[in-house]
Image (tube, rainbow, N blue to C red; front, side):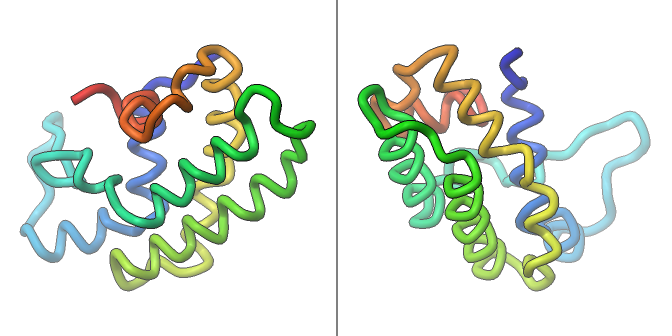
Length: 134
């Protein structure tokens, strides 16, 4: 089953620790029953950064048609290193503990690509698959 774009976006938010940083920067959370976009007005700007582009390149190299057989552990290890670096650059508190929030992402990306290999055709297609279209 393909995870929803909302689940993937929520997981990315959890990784970086942006919830705490955004709350501190933008004030109190919304009233109960209302939601807030902690990625900012344009979620694509949130993911359009060198670390996510490296994760895309890693995913293409690992999951593209014709790639060597998948070594999920190696893919996860490399992805977690990128996620950790991304968390470190985005907010205090985005250190090693935040990687725990991303344990499902590499496996979810594997399933997304299995369901639709065209998501690897471009960075934009990849991000659309992860957080939803523009």
